[in-house]
Image (cartoon, rainbow over all chains, first blue to last red; front, side, top):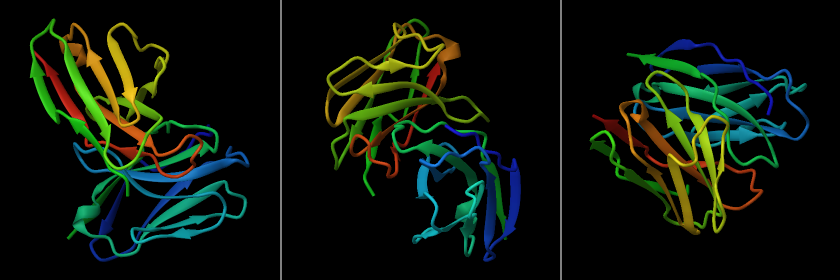
Length: 110
Length: 117
């Protein structure tokens, strides 16, 4: 699976959009981009995933660049409960387990 | 979304004893489940892949005789930490995907925190 690079930490004001970047320059054609988050002492929570088109669900939007070498997770209106570590993971369609990197620790402040 | 449940959520045991952690898929059948371990301030590390009706596949460096995995049904996988020692204290997390080859989300349990005294 391709490696991802994320900033170690980010801050965001409550109510503002949180834009979390992820670089995956070695992604191959059959690899998906997955985003998970982990709130302290809990299991990871699925957020969203995509192949090449932008995706949106009730939690977030995923913007994937045309060359697929990077993506951005957007939380449109961050709340204090969005404070968590966010993981960007790239995995092939034939793979089963997901390999977690260090992620981005997002702190949402009042 | 689908629900994966772990039990117990936390356990304290004495050194040398064995501890069993259960992972259940509550509303779907999981032919494959995954076990992760997470030490404080670190990311999740994949330990093993549990396949229903067959032997588990362990990641490099994970002792199969110490971390026994049983996946006897399509909704239950168990991880037994045998002869636990303080260095085995960690957060153990299981996960499952609904169907083989499904590229959808991987669902995670709430995690089980093991403390070995």
